[in-house]
Length: 454
Image (tube, rainbow, N blue to C red; front, side):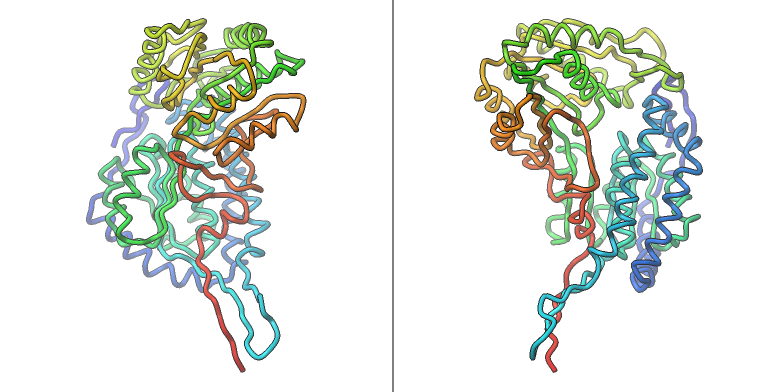
């Protein structure tokens, strides 16, 4: 399998792909190692992950450079991702022992009762390319701490990063028969899904997530899906600093080139501040530096996949053909690599694909609304339910809108952020289950009830 740099279209490496036979061999290896790993104390498993935590910082230069070379994200954003991953791991290091400890709901009397949390067993972690460290550690870190063995499949667009993760886990004391990597494209994923595993955890698109859920449904094993979004942002007319809010919205749209499940993908602005917001947003958009992701100062690198260029161009053409106005951007950059200018459209509506289909790129439509009620109705008009943001000087007013939205996360005066302290979950086409917080620790274990008499 060839690894291609999206900034240059050059082949930067070749990785042997797994076969169906090798996938089964790795499963047998994990089956032998998981019970031994589970027999260790939580503290012993946490100690291994603590060494991995330190290794991510110690080797951050090579890790960041590799991540940028195969995904195209600006180098500083690769460093940011590593720092964010370490922050999440720190949460798991600090809190896992508490949430995995046995509990005694009834500690006295003729029949005592306790709850013990046991690992699921051998689980599949089918990960994503856009944030391979961040979405990866959400799964394989609490899974390992919980006593599971992990079958990890990195995306074919971030395989080198996946191999770095494997190397550092092994160096940190995680046994080879507890963590195995499957390399390859879609076929390798299909072989993984065919295995009799004890849990399936996927991060990616709704279409693929739905196929995975259908394939493993008959096994009655846990299946958790972290899928996409069409996340809205609403600007109320009481906002005073329009430039600041426009800048925050812009960052929510274009960070990581918009290749984020919780990126801002549609903006609604109340008519009293609409013109000022659009002007400020467009002015700030024009100043963004598009270029080589390895160069300091680059804010927008290439898209990670060539097919996404055609997809975004199609969304823009559909909108313009239906009456939208393209204020800026949307054109391919005349250089090697999968580059496209960040784009902003106005005069948009929900009859346009750019307002209804997930874009996963630096493209956004801005729609004028007359009231909070109209904004709430438009924000809710989606098959997705990941995040939604409201900007206002009044929390009480913003909360009335946020309470109406069927999303896993809401933001007041911020957007496009994830915290390890609270659950990360999606509703509707944005997924099933959750990661992060104590609930994300408990997602990788199963309770056993003890009734103790005598």
